[in-house]
Length: 478
Image (cartoon, rainbow, N blue to C red):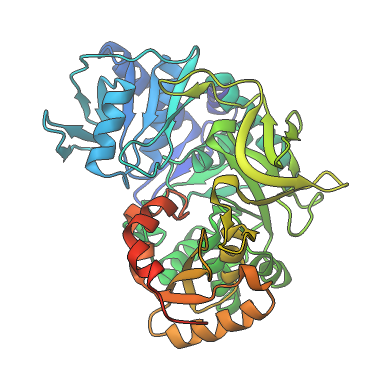
């Protein structure tokens, strides 16, 4: 479907702009020719499993689609992975070639030019699940992230369902902000615009505001929005907060927007309300790689504040006895790399409920539920999401498991610890006592790249290991 649609656009609108970067643009004819040329080169080189270790840019999508056209298994290698994690990806997936980066026998990575193909020694080629066409690696809590094996029919089903939902909006330009190595932006920022026949702007990460994995420039992001005038974006909660702030100070940065999808983590109801009240077209969604990315989504004519939307048509949801969400979807992945295939229903690990109108409400990860020393249960994502309405709080991570008083690790905005304390005090007053952040520890370490997933969620086990001594000995009361 994707390759056929690309060919159709190259024939029906050959001179229309398909891809844009800072340096140049590609028409649909040029896009299709670039994909076909690279697909042929990869086939001639005998590549079977290709690691895609490129920064964001049009060539990322060209290479991705070239793999699809050539029937080569594509394995995105996130640039934010450590050398150990990248080495794990190469060996566990059995890669025989890499675009963008190469490895020596010792596992040290050396950059190569964007179009250069680096052959890799492949002593073993692990068996994959049937029909695997892409392996997307999630950010694990150790040096060994999990590979999710995706089928072409599942990827294309999800992209098609989203394109159908977006078509009434008559979008003209999508701006890629998140890494294309994450499945969410790969599908929403790469495949959906292709199916709709609209322009995709793919700047380098630094050109939309990213410096590394955890630093983000409001000013650069504002400049990108003003320059490219996108009509759609996909944002994680922290970037939605940045957009809302920019909109309040300079409405022109968001004047072109028609649809902003917010996901990748629980979004504060307060933040969503503020954004919508200010006029931003923000719609929360929910999904995970194991289910082919997006599962539920709010839409302009079908939305409910505080929910993640209704399931995409064709997806069946149910709940187990503990309230964990189960998903049966045509987009479901085949299974984890090296493990048994997934069953028809995938256990998401997320606690959720469905209201009488069919909207899904996600309450947090089942494994993250904290049980205090007094036997009270609470989901830390709930408090963390609500704290995102506190302008002085950059990031917060809550712990309460086995503790008499809950501890909040806080990264405050520069010079704003006092304001953050005041704002969290006001927030705490509206929370039940068992869920309040009783002890505060101010530390920027929780924003370190190695302690965050690709979507900016905290890697709790790693943070606990690093901060356990301070948490258990905290004496600062809220």
